[in-house]
Image (cartoon, rainbow, N blue to C red; front, top):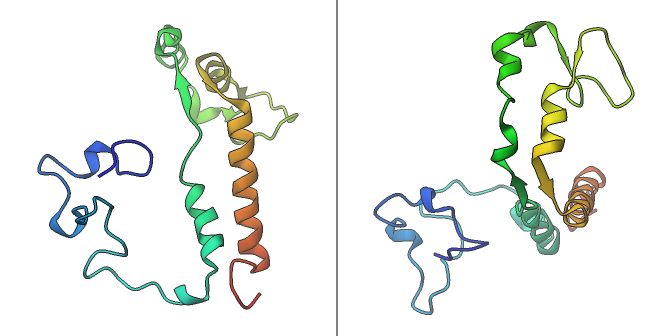
Length: 145
């Protein structure tokens, strides 16, 4: 298995390594196709390979960095004011610009402080996802569309 991008995470194969059907081939490449006994996906032959490759690339999520040293004090809010059942989460339930008397921005405020990422990489990933979603909506993912 590849240890970087494209391979399974280390926890996915267990202590004994990959199962026999998933062993690399003689040239070191990963196995091709579904494992034995896997259900056959109906209508797979109608899907455009390039569209499926775009779909597959959506699984390569942008890299996020969480600075756990900046999380000091995050849990005190929940210990002292555990009112999540009566609150509306900003950026989750409430849309941008909406307000409510019981709105809470605790988590989203901390997330902005603690999580960092490459904005260009995230924008590129979002654009790819929008393209894939559009191809699903308009049917261009299929040969017949």
